[in-house]
Length: 267
Image (cartoon, rainbow, N blue to C red; front, side, top):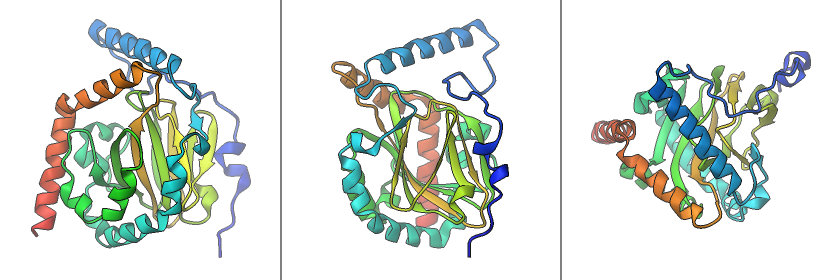
């Protein structure tokens, strides 16, 4: 039986605060070089928004992307592979153990990430164990990063924003604990709940925050894909994203992922 929900204590019923922005939510730079980098980022993101095929919303309708229905139709196949992965959940690395930059928003063992694809990453061993998931990921144009995102009971991810609006975020809900109202995400000023087998599409450069205030695990297939832009900007955007594999922090993440796979699958 579902637990009673204290509606008065839900975030959507508290006094509103304006979170609908792309402002930096982490520490502002203290040097002129850092400040110039932020100005450059803001200029680039304004340009991306201006040439976006679907405008510049914070949350997107699934009907805008024809491949969504194809993936949703076969979501039980992904869930079946996830069930096998969840048998060794405790051995899966936490997000910040792969990507150290994630340590600004999580530093415990309650956000696990089973990587299937990533810029500059070799996830071959993980991918080999999830062939149906990998087959369906190939239907997502411009897919750049994919992993099972596993939130432990009562995990909170504080307000933050993504690195670059040239990619969009796709969540396919695979395991959603009850009561759903207590497993939620705020994107800008709006709250959403996950439903198993259904999609949530959003721009993660808008301020967002996540709660799993239940006693169960919440799992989504977490995908970043290239944002559809008018040409030639779409081509340029893909080129820019692909160049991220040269970034030291992504090379380091790829090395950590490969090291974990080598240790786990040979143990």
